[in-house]
Image 1 (spheres, rainbow, N blue to C red):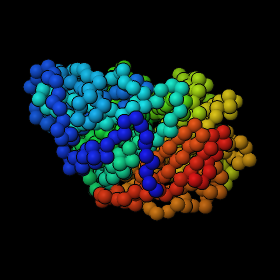
Image 2: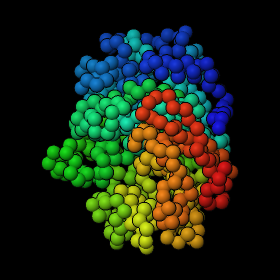
Image 3: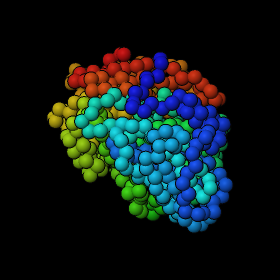
Image 4: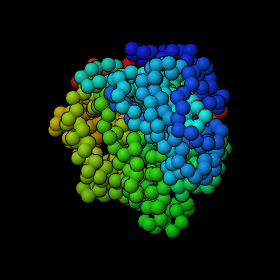
Length: 531
């Protein structure tokens, strides 16, 4: 299928885009040929080649966007190869890739306590408009990035975006990220497991993690830096703004709040105090390495990550955090073990404050589509034949009172065009959402699109059949696929289209991409249809 064209008042020139793509593929600094010199920033002695982790943008608003970079000439060193002092970093935003029409500029100070990262919150930009940006530290100039602001309130443009999850460095090449960049989405939603915390060699031999299982701030920083050196991920960050949320592996597999995974050898005595220190380090490093606004910088073990982004009257995105505030999983997090503890009214996957916030976000939305990007399998997932519906206890099955509250609110308040975006499970799925999944005759309230992994699980397989028990026990499931890839979406006021984009292998580079399946939701008609 031909990738959708993205129309705008200032279309990205193909020559410039391919120039950026080629440079990233070579692992080079992405400088635009003939670019005008930057105005001088504050004098600074900076080691050569400090922009080896590239550039990124994120959390677009109608009038602004966050610009990110990190000074790290030696990315895997404890200090990134930077001196222990503040460095002035100048940023510039332009209408053109040669920076002849600069519209905003400023200076941020990259400090050692924040791993010399920059989080420039740029405002005063035009809605739904394309921009180029770059940084300078001393005489060193960064790669050129491309970003796009959100549409203005009251406007209804088509929004083209992609979402992805689960990129394990050791299990494959990030080829899918490159294909995503080539399709030039308005925005990318990353739904967690941006990196994996495991020790070198635990997950595979395609590539090797740096160091042991990560626990300290220096170790989390080095792991983030290692992932940021990937040329395909670097290209995608330089091409489109990201909206990020985490799952578990950015900190520790299957943790819940301040409860670590049981029996994790990397956690020493496995005490609450020990895990709190680990989570504090993980959250700090995550904020440092993502295009998040400065006010989201973590305080102790808390990082406020759930947030709302409006894309005109087309879509409102309510981004969730299903890790930080949850209670411990029932039944020791066992797979396909069910019972009354899954319905414990005191159990929560979102926490009281976030849950109330989600309800407010849905009720205040005036957009045609109400989209909830989040991490964990939302629909019922019963893989055992018989009357017990078992379930996935790390997902919403383990917190059924929380799920029922969400779906109950959608039903009772008549929230239209409710769509959940999900990652985590390393396969593609499509689900109708009902308040009672055991009664297929009940009303469909919304849809769930589940993306497979970027690499986690290796190449996957060609099957589109999860087994008869899945179809028998989960009549709300409409599609399954076991390859790697991402989901591409195009949303207008009247229609939501989702394309499942897959690659046939990741254990070697260069896999082509194709659309395995496409679905459509018509506005006002709950449930997916074949495109």
